[in-house]
Image 1 (cartoon, rainbow, N blue to C red):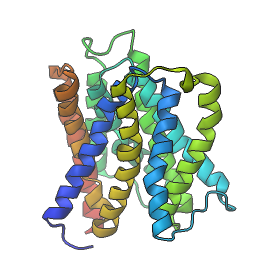
Image 2 (cartoon, rainbow, N blue to C red):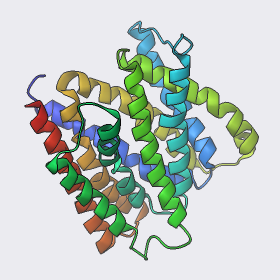
Image 3 (cartoon, rainbow, N blue to C red):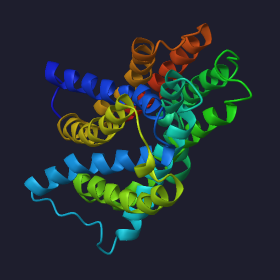
Length: 295
């Protein structure tokens, strides 16, 4: 991989901003839309730029090939379930909490990789990182100003959503030899197929009279935070590799907290700041261990 230059770091920062901006936009979307509708519109609009890219690059979409069951399973676990759980949870908690809770994905993936892969085992540095990171999350749950008995379950559902991303990532290893654009396009197609009957019978969004800001946010979530962000991620992965791209994990909770304050004036407590620092330090140690292994 080439040495990262200014443009590479700029694109990495843009990717972090796009993914971080998803959280306050989910909050705005919940003002008018239910969690199933938000999940459906995210995958529907998110599929558009990905499928257009595949069309112009003449990349074959294998959504209905012999591996369709893998695409369907990953589409449900990696898109349908987390999009629903996060939207359901954010309705009752601040979006900055969701950004911090979701940033545990690299920590959860490290734990899961230890048990389900042969060459991603724990070492001392990784263990320290995991303990620090998850200690920050436990500390965050003690913030009675933001998490109480009324929204405790919602916060747990967001954590469950982050775990779904991790499980989906592990399942994706089963089809890792396929092009990223093909895999993403295929799982987006299946996620849309799965959500059509669910959104039709459960929420009936055509009966809604949504606010303009909620509609703009949900379209943004699909086109930008899902579709364009994945394409940008592909570019960074191809040019700079996974280790460089994974640095986005440090920035998302920081940007998410800042953006939620700017756009929604959400409260930033002392415990939020401590938790944020602990999670970022935890991710740093985990990534440091990965970097040392590759050098």
